[in-house]
Image 1 (cartoon, rainbow, N blue to C red):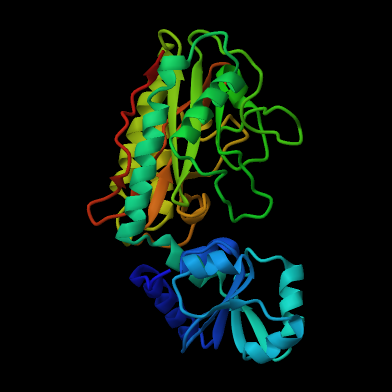
Image 2 (cartoon, one colour; image 1 turned 120 degrees about the vertical axis):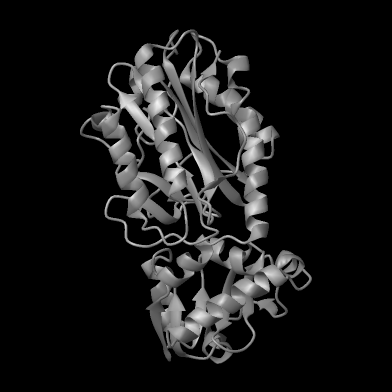
Length: 387
C-alpha cells in the first residue's frame, strides 16, 4: 500500500505518546489497534518505537499485509528464538485492556530484556478522536443504516415474530454493505449486530449493558430477537449497528403497527428532548458525566425517571458511548464517568425508556463532538416508524 498521511499521522501521534510516557516502544497486538495504525487487519504484531520506523511482523497473510499496510517495513514473523534480536528491549507499552494475559506472558518470555507496561489509556484516547476521513466513512455508514431502518414500515406487520422482522432487517442491511458483527473491546462482550424487541418482552433482564436486551433464542445467546409474535399497537424497538469500511455506526428507531398508545408517544417525545439536550452538550471541554446528568434531569421532568434506560431495578447508567472501529469506544456519557469531551469524538446517544407491560421506546443517533455541539451523522427522521 502506498504511504498514507492518515496512517503516518496516527503512528506519529502514538509514538509521541510513547515518548511522553518515557517508554521505548509500543507493541501492538490487538488486531483492531493494528488495523487503525497500519490499514491491514492481517494476523500481525506492530512494533512502534518512540523514535524510528515501525515494523509489522506478519504471521498470515504476508502477501495481503504487504498489499494493504501503510508502512515500509512489513516482514514475516520471525521464529521465536529470533524475536529478542529483532526487537530491542526496554520499556514497552502494550494494551493490557485487550490482550490476554497468556499472550502477554508469551511475549515477556520472548523478550526477556523488556518490561511490558500498560498503554491502553493513551491508545484509546488517541483512537477516540476521529479524523475528517474517519468521520466521512462513518457518515456514509449512517446513511446506509438510516436507509434500511427507514424501510421497516414496509415489512412490519402484526403477527410477525421478532425474529422474522430482525431477519428481514438484517438481510437488507447486508445488501446495503454491512460487513459483519461490530467489534467490541470489553471482555466477554458480544452482540450479533442489533436487536428487534417488541412489547412487554423489552423488559426482559439480561447480561448486556444496555437498556433493552431481549430474550434471544437460547440461554447460550440470551439477547436480541425471540420467536414472540408482535401485536398491533406494540412498540417495536429496532436497535442496530452497521459496520461500513470497518467503522461502526449505532442507531435506534421505534416502530409500531397501527396507532401508538398515548404512553408510547409521551415517552418517545421525552426521548427526543433528552437527545436534543445531550447533543447540545457535545462540545469540547464538557465533562463526560454532564450529558448523563442532564438526561436524568429531563427524564425526571417527564415523570419517567424510574423507567429511563431500562425497567425499574435493571437500568443502565449511561446515555451515550463512543463508537468507531469498535462499538464500545471512549467517551462514555455515564454515571461517575471521568474525562472531558474532545472535538472529533464520535458518540452514539441513546435515550430509551422501558415501560412495564407496554414495551421499549426510544431513539439513538451517532454524533460528532464539535464546537457547536453534537453534529448528527444520519438524516433519518426521529419520528415513530408507523406501519
